[in-house]
Length: 433
Image (cartoon, rainbow, N blue to C red; front, side, top):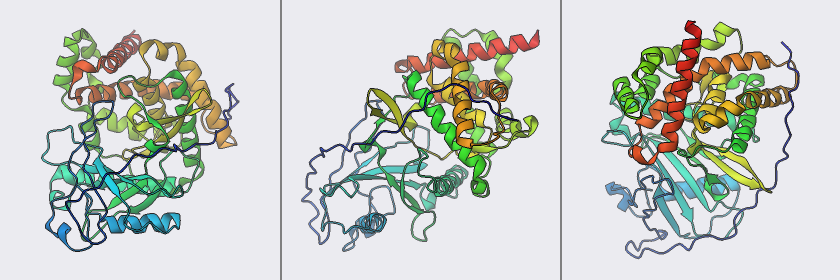
């Protein structure tokens, strides 16, 4: 099946200008020790109200060993991290650099432990050839991995490591640059060390969603990911399908979801017609079997193109994608899962209705151009697959709403979910006639 070119504008990438200013790093005189840099614990809530830990160091006893500094909530030592940075950038690390650490994530579910730790380490050096900060992600602690939930999240961490090993082969992908991957450790639980994309970009607000301009560019970047994964298929031996338990976690409790949205003026009849989609069997089969049913090839799906995973930069007067983070849900599947989530999760009802056709045409244009040949998807196939995945996107967005701690302050996100419920209901009624 051939792909004729749709009309879309090519945007040349602009040079990324690194901020010149850097924060002063205060000292901590409480731990005078040889080769012990200064450290301070931070509690800095970001603009979206996410909780940030104020803890500074792990409480493990061997952290008091001479010349050993464990970074809070990880099994990683400062010395090990500095060696990895030196190896990656082939630079000599300044002696006794000052540093600060802050935790970026806090579990929102009812568990006794975090499923992973994400921390930022900021350094006080002035060398522009070295990163001013790095982000470390580690999975659930070993002693809690016997729990089924712990095992699940550890498997998801290893999945993300596999995806990053593949994305690093293609520098033009908007995945974060990886400094080091350590999947396994006898003493610890593995770690991914990556660039801190917030140095050069702006995290987007998941409540507000994305502007139409940013959605267009994100679809362009996803088209590039999909085209590369079609041409270079080594990822398929590294990344498996997501387990059914992932989809059960996505849905949560359907009765709670229905009760909440009915209180938000969604008529009960909507759920009578669309309730069948709130099923892990539906989500799993749609994600894994759609390509076979439609006889199209699978691509590497990012799976989580939520606004909070999108970092943008300014190129002149235009806002462009700098990086797409959190590849934990990366899996083999249908291109339309990413496309539907990008459009349905991040645009309000009017923007979605008015622009879906042009957005799908733009995705097709970039996919055909990047594929550079007889690509397997026509505009008609893209439209058809998108419609298949709209209910899928609706269910997962409702799950995100239900996972919020303070729903009263998230009205734009709730309105997007309500509009999707109405759209899927209308699609169902149309199919019934």
